[in-house]
Length: 81
Image (cartoon, rainbow, N blue to C red; front, side, top):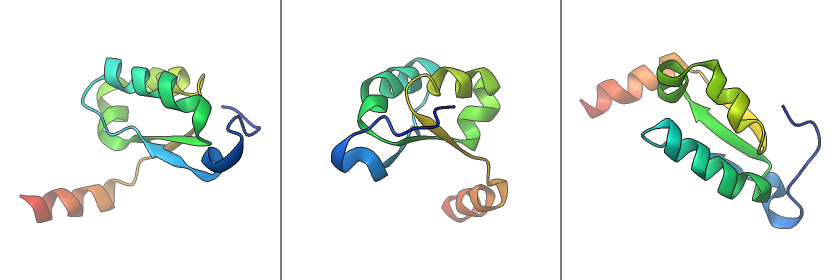
């Protein structure tokens, strides 16, 4: 995990959600946007399907926020069903 800010200027306080459908898309977005933002968020679905290795790969590009809030996710999914 990165400890210092990599993103100068306006992107320094931005956390970009990588809520994409597969590992390839997530890593592509991490490589593209990581240098421009402070944080990249990995959601529960991506973490469960891809495992902790995904977190390590994304962390090469920016700090990682692992959103593993299952309770909130379950409520949101139930409302949308």
